[in-house]
Image 1 (tube, rainbow, N blue to C red):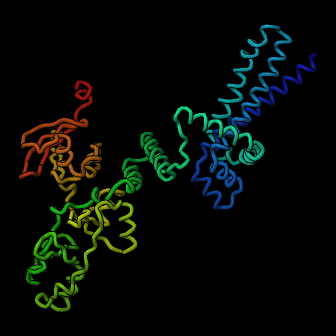
Image 2: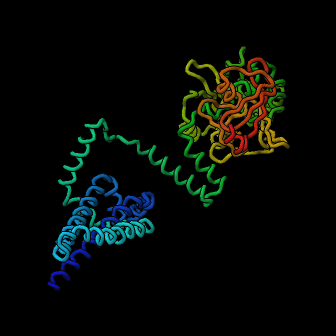
Image 3: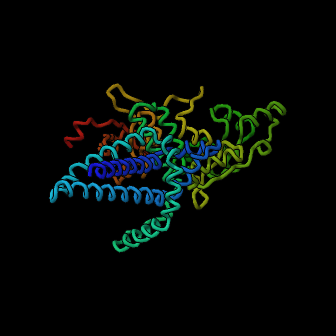
Length: 427
């Protein structure tokens, strides 16, 4: 009898250890860094390659591990119950529950999972081989279980999406990791802005980052060459659109370098502006910032004019505008520190209406929403559902707004201040 109990006890212990293996395997394989595994696989690591293979069909891998865990748990419970029923009679099931539950919980679940999440990458590479073998052996059972689960969910109107947007999921995963580490303090604010800015490019269009047509400096191509040269030299821009008859009828781009070269060769009076100007490049305002960046790099251009679906000029976008979404404002000797944003001694900020919301958020470390409007004035008009008059005040999204100046239908200046936490709770 004693020998039988000893053997049964050893079998139960072995089953608990096997359950620990399954728990650790599930946690490690799902928690391992996919980026690190991909790198190791490229370096020739066979174990990392097995991990990546398993994660390509994660549902089947998890199904095999859970099936194995359930088998050993049921077996351990059955053996333990037979032992304790023989010893304690009708109290056997209760004693089995009291004894086996903490053993399985501590040594078969919590302990292995904690250890596995701590060393996920290394453990995943160790367990990948046995789990891969299990997936092959238990494959038919797992397929049957998946079929039953999917069809059972359909009865309740739930359909399993087999076409997951992998790129969007990966972006969300990286963004979540960046935000988490930033909150913990291990990623500095400026680094966070750069990482998030790079990830956000695919969500932005050139309309979100462009300079509006009303802020574009243009020159009349029909002016005398000497006057065009004088005006070009008076501006800080290196590329200036040229128009004819109508400021929105752009006929070319005047580059300062080309102009200086022509002046050096022919003198101010001998410059032929039509020969110096370059062709304008037009891009739709719906183009994503990420695609526009790729086009800038492919064409080796830094400047494009933005048009709407009817071909009307809406603004211009530069390579610098897009790069600033990643690295923040790029300053040169002609730039103003934060153009159009003037902090006041009382903590408020005077802002030009044309300032983009994203620039204001970055400059002041604010979180004004930019989904419905590009500029600060646009946000106020969107929320007010009207064009406010000077002196009107509004409060939304945790900020207070006061209209300072309005020119015709444009809000040209506003004062903004952040509401205190107490004010928000009281409101």
